[in-house]
Length: 254
Image 1 (cartoon, one colour):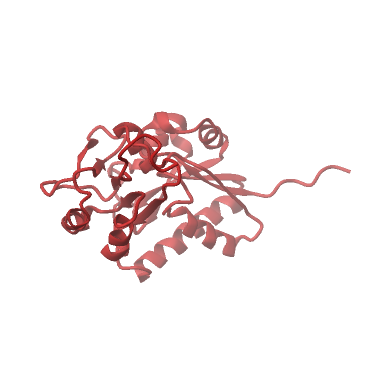
Image 2 (cartoon, rainbow, N blue to C red):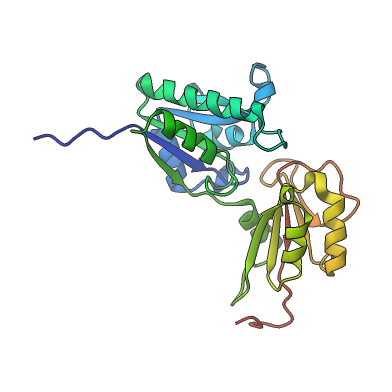
């Protein structure tokens, strides 16, 4: 008796913060083996064929043939929660993936910045595709996160000994950030572009501004890494704030 045929697959592939060199070997292997690789694009730019590629597309382009890359529109700049626009985009994207599977694409990949299990659009896509095609096998390939890249580039260890590590989005509000800054560990804040002035104030009140590091456009030609200060402007949405734990001597938190 022959073995049963494997079902179709949808794999969320983490492609790191933006530098193609930070893709893992497994990520490259899965991307190259996929019948089609979807990449997220801002919905209001999707109809513009001359629109520049998004970060995920730029990152995977050196590893995937152009004829296997397809843009998938999402409401990436919608900050209003679960809005009708966002839900329409989720539903349309899932239908597009389902249509690809129905059309014979057995291995479908979705390239996502960072890691597919950390603040990624892929989780919403996967949930909706599962509801449309329950037979689809969904998996993920972990990717290098922005906080890891920023820690490496700035020479600041994320955790030592018994130190906690807190990762949160600025979109959650300042109260969780203030609570984390009052603790002993490292704090990483994503998506701080519109809350920059508020974050500067929170860092000052906690006495942790001087140690804070800001990473902008990591892995891209216009990237900048430096102190977190009140004069910073033109912050991209995908900016990363790293506040290292207070360490006064080697092994102090063992």
